[in-house]
Image 1 (tube, helix red, strand yellow):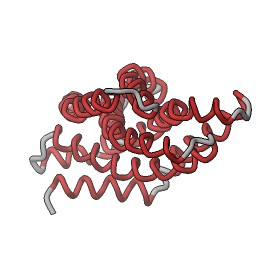
Image 2: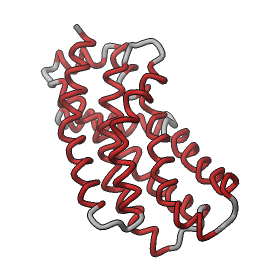
Image 3: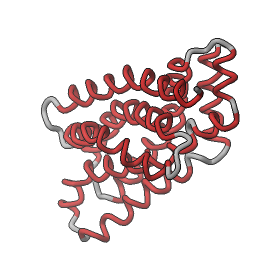
Length: 214
């Protein structure tokens, strides 16, 4: 198994074996449960805003695992071992992003089906919501790992992660909610933003990991 594949498998195994995904998924569903209490039981209104609610909940849920993505490996010296084996920091970051997405996205998509039922979203609207999440979650995962690398080792990293990640995630939220609402062109813009984050974040995270090690 190559170093990249080993890191991906390690991240995926950690995500599921430590229960680290339970909290984000539970938080995501909790938002979907609470939202109808806030705006009332109007089924048409819930169906109209449901896509945006699911995207906002997904974005907030994606913040929760940020602290465990890079900081524990930096503190325990695992990142130093990867560097000693000749694995580039950007490659480590890319592998962490893929492993994080594989562990996070399927659970989120499954929870979205439940959330759609809670928000009374019709079946015809559910398909574009799931497709938009499938396109946008790689960007969320990339942004999460880059943010985790930037705040690793800093005091109050959890609060800082929100301040760093949320502004950059706004385009994903806008175009993701738009695609869920069947707005023309939103899928293409969502895909472009997600691809840009996936392509650029490994280098940002790699540079942050390298600076943290020095």
